[in-house]
Each structure stands twice: as C-alpha cells, then as structure tokens.
Length: 490
Image 1 (cartoon, rainbow, N blue to C red):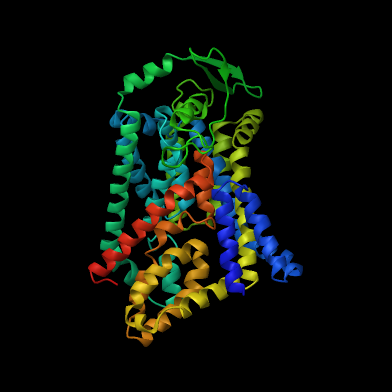
Image 2 (cartoon, rainbow, N blue to C red):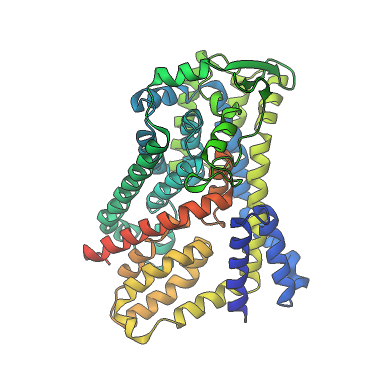
C-alpha cells in the first residue's frame, strides 16, 4: 500500500506543477501532508517535517548566502567582461551561445557544487539570452544536464556515496567510467548544438552592432527604485508609447512556447520590457566597482578553492564571503541594505523552496514510502535479468535518483542491487559504476535544492523546466549507460 501511495504522491506532485495547477512550494508542502494523513500517520507529520528541515537547513543557509554573494558580484561587475567577451565571440549567434552555456556549465561544474555552477552560469549567460530573446528553458535545460554529467566527479557526491555504501574506492568507480562520461558530455554538446540551431532558425543571427543598435532605438527611461543611487531601467518602445516594467519571469517557455501559454512573439515582447536582462551589461549602473575588480575576482577564486579543498563547511564559507564582499564593496550601511534588499526575492524563493522540499522528503522517508518503493522495484526484477544487473542498475538509477535523494538511492537501494548482482556473478564495482549513469536527470529532480537556484535566477517556471529538460536528460543518461556497456566498463 505504501508503495502505491508513494508513486501516486510523486506523480500527483509532478502533474500539478507541470500543469501549473499549484506552485512548487505549495505542492511540496500540501501534497505530502495530505498523503501523510491519508496513510494514518498524520500525528507524526511534525516530526517528519522537522527531521527534513534539520537535514536541509545547512543547504538552505549555503544557498541564502551564496545568492547574496554572487548577486553582489553581479552588481559590482565581476562577470561583465565575461558577458561582453562571449557576446563578441558569439557575434549574437544563438547557436554559439547555447553551446557556450553547455561549455561554461561543464567547466564551472569542476568545483563539485551544483548551486555554485548554476549561479555563475546564469549570471554570465542570462543577459545574453534576454538581449536576443532566446528561450530561457534552453539555458536551464542545457546547464542542468551538463552539470548532471559532471556531478559524477568523485568530490561531486554520487560517486563518493556509491563508494561509501559499497565499501570500494571512489577512484575505481570514477576513473574507468571517464570514457562513458566523456560520451555523455559529448551528447550534451551535440544537444546544445541542435537546440542552438533551432534558436538560430527562430531568431536569426545578428552582429553585436546590430543588437546594440536595436537597443538604442528604444527610449530608456530611468526611474528611482527605493531611494539611493540604485535605479531601475524601464524601456519605452517607439511603437507602444508607454513605459513598461513588466516582469519577464516565465515568459520564455519550453520548446518555443511561453510559460504562460503565449507564443514566441509574445514572450519576446515581454522580455523586452524587463530590465533584468540588461543589468549584467549596463556600463553605467551605480553599483559598479571597477577599482575593486581584482579584489572581487581574487575573493571568488579563494572562495571556490576553499570550497573544493574543504577548508570550512560550505555554508560558513559563503557566509564569510558574503559578509566580506558587502563590507568591502559597499562600506556604507544604506548601500549594504539596498544590495540585500535587491536580492531578497531570490533568497526567499530559493530557501523557501528548499524548506518546502524538506516536507516532501521528510514524509517520503518518515512514512517508509521510499523504502517500500525501493523494495518493490528491486523485487520486480525478473530472475533472468540477474546476470545483467549492471544494465538493470543503470536503468533503475535514472528514475530512482530523480524520485528520491541521492542518499536514499545510494545508501538504501544500491546495496540491495549490489547483493543481487553478486549472487549472479556481477562485480560490486560494475554495479557502482552503473549507479552513476542517471545523474544527468538527477540534477533536475524536484528534490535537488540546486535546481531551484537555477530556475529562480533564470526566472523560469519549474514545470516548464521539467517538461523541457526531462527527455533530454534521460537521453543523455542512456548515452552514458550505453557507452559504459559498449566500452566494457559496466
């Protein structure tokens, strides 16, 4: 019974958010609460939620201060040269920009932290997508899939979990899988190339001068925003005759369709009226700190180095980094308050989503649904598939790491699969290698806090991101698994 209810609860959640009948935060809270009562464990709901919140509290703290830190770095112009350089190199070619998104996400993913990867990638690429009116779900889908493949690095999490759960060396899992993972990365680049060609066909190719000329053809009206020197840009179209500050959130939908159901031309018009897409390249904004550029660059490199080398817990590093960045760049208290207020919406959206996800994971784990779902799936494996447990594990890793946390899969399900494999002569290492094949999809799971950073900063509806990304991420995971079998790794 718990098995069926677990699958029904997950399916209900996904359907409601993809059909936009409920917001992700409401669905993450109300649906598990309802199912908890339905299975007769409503009296324990508080315990389940507090356990889930306690487990995710460090992650929420890390995201809170990381958003403030990278937000300040955007404000002071740290990423402006990158944005300008990419735009000049790409010559406003949508295909090159999408491929550049995949390459940038893959490179930044070397730090092993998905949230940081998405913050840097979106910070650098978002203004380009907005300038050219490109589909934002293409950016989030490509970035999430590239990061998912790179998430298999030994310090990224899944590989270390598999090694710990099965008591093997992480290097023995990862190093032989490098050719298969490289094929997965190639698949991401080919995907980004194909999606970029589609965007190029839809939008055409412009030169940098043409893009800038188009922008200067519109009258920019600057109005005060909350006092101080901070100003918000509103664009008045020559054809419209009125200034508009319309929020562009969600106007870029999946596969060329607006998130609100509008077509591409509607989405383009909406995106033109937002200042968000222009902030990253505005050379006159009051928050720029050109004299502190190398200080900010050095601080960022130091922060990422400390994170990789684990000098301190990641939440502590970002807390210290955010405090230092604010103090040095904005020594006056009103300016610091203005910067914090400017990023408060992102902080609230992301951390709120994380704590809401804690309700979902807490109920799944506390009621025993995850355990029963895993046992049912393992028991459903036909006896004849025993000698092919590597393939079975790889295929199961795709949906299971999407519907449950990595901890739940690697510490709860993987040991059972490894035991079944050993009974049929399949080595533990093969099972461990196959288990990391599904990470391309895992990074878009509603149970992964980092994905809310991605969609939040990109102003994309989570349902749109899911609908667009899942099929491509599954395909990438299958490429990794197929290459592992073809090369004799699995």
